[in-house]
Every structure is written in structure tokens, then in C-alpha cells.
Length: 376
Image (cartoon, rainbow, N blue to C red):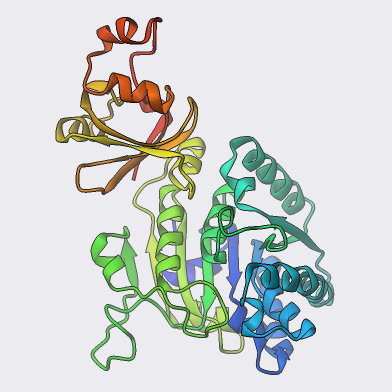
């Protein structure tokens, strides 16, 4: 079975493995942890487990909890140092809370703190996959958060929406459910009385992105609709469905899935595991700009040759992940370069048979081989 409707996320046959992301504004209110609400959510997770689904939780809230304990203003986000300190204090409380509430249902919680590099580096990504697989096989409920105590502005996800999508890739999940403080994606600002809820989206396009706002409505989290659409793009490349639903209500999963209140993003295709990892990468070392002919060749499944390259951006080494973009700046693909940036510069526009004369050694014919390239 495949996922075609929101309520399929509650069907073990269609969705045997589900990732649930919980936003900061849901966990933490003005007076601290929203414990009563969280208990209803944990009961829903226990019900999902009882009907045969495996569940992974991606939980925000450490910074907000730690900021309240330390008395930091701006919710602990006034500076990087404040956020790191708040996360160090808040993560203990957050993991303890999940362990206690899941334990009340006979479930074992397992904490994983991940950094961007854990999911961007291929070997570490595979280690995450192995750990998640073993935990799920053992019957545990992994509870995951970004390791904000060590993350910096340059090496962090910045929001748990994209983290949830990357975790779903690593865990080979069937779907992601993003619980937030909005009902769904609307065709315009939901404050507009003319706004229309979009129940289903197949493929995140430029038109869909234009409907989004990057702001977090609660002011507590770090995401917004833009980050949720980016998460949907990451998920769809791996053949994973993603849903956005309002989590502010009690028993939010039942309300969203049972009532069909939310937006379901259906994947356009299912890439292989390696290409899904490559397509979902958030950090790239550079970019190769290509002409229209090369773009057409890539769309037909060809490798990227130097003859079609018109520009090189950034500093990268052989084996690094780079973007492939057209003259307008639109990113068409991600790929692993067979050459360093300076070598690519030397080879721009040249035929493969000229490479040896230019570089002084027998090179590879393609700048990026089609097996190391994924179209977006």
C-alpha cells in the first residue's frame, strides 16, 4: 500500500514507520511545559505502537525549557551562547519528560542528539541509520533533537522540520507528520478570509513556495512554513510522504488524521538511498553553472561533462557535494564532483578528449557521473 490520504498515516500497512515532529510552541507555553497536552500526544503514540506502527519523535523544546530555568530573555535565542547554554539545561528536562510519559505506557524512550554533520557526512549518516534501525527493532521510541549545545550558526539545521525529514530518510520511514501551530498550508496568508486550505500537494514547486511565510507564528520556534516546505522537498526525493497539521489541540493526531485537517505532500518519485541522501543535503561546497544543452542532457539521464559548464562557484575538492544550476541560478541537481574546483575552472567548455592535455594526467571523462548525481 501507498499513502494517498492523511488518514493513511494511521494505517500500519500504508505507514509502518512514522516520524512525528513536535514544535517548541506545542511543548512549552507561558507557564512551562504543557504536560496535559503532551500526555494526550504520548497516548496517541502508544496507540500507534499498539496497532503495529513504529514511531520516531523529533522533539523541539530544549532551548525554551532551558531559557525558562536559567531566566534568559528572548526565549534563550538572544545570542548563540544563550541558545547553547539553554539547550544544555533544557535537554535534560526534555528527555526526562519523554522518558517518563512514554514509560507510563510501557514504552522505552531513547535519546539521540544529532548535528547537521551527522546527516551530511555519508558514513555518519549510515551510522545514524544503523542506530535507529536497532532501536526500533528493540522496540524503543527514539526521541531526537538537534544538538544545540554544540551547533553553531554555520553547522546547524536551524529548525527541526528539516531535521525530521532527514531523520525520516535515514530511518527509511514511510511518512513524516509535522505538528505545529498552523492547520495546514493555505494558498495565501491564513489570516486572509479568502485563504483556501490545500489538502494535498504533489511536488513542491515555485508556486507552492510563493504561498509560504518564513516566520514562526509563535515566536518561540525557529521554523515557519518555508522550513516545512523545504522539509517536504527533502522527504519527497526519498519517496516519503509528509503532512503538516495543527498540534495545539488535545489528541492532535486523531484530530488531524481522522478529520482530514492538514496538508499532505505526496512524493513525486522514490530515489535510491544514496541519491535520496545526496538530494536532501543542506550544505554544499560549491556550484557548477551549466548551459541549456547540458541541462537537457541531465534531464535525459546523462552525466555532466565539462563542455556544458559555464561557471564554477566556491572552493571544493574531489568527492565534495556541489549544486548544479542554470544561468538564472535555479538549482537543477546535486552531485559529487570528480574534480577539484580549480580543475573544473580549467576544464570549462572543453571536450573530454582535451582534459589530459589541460591537466597533465589521464582524467575521468565526466565532471559528475550520472550515478553520483540526483535531479531536484
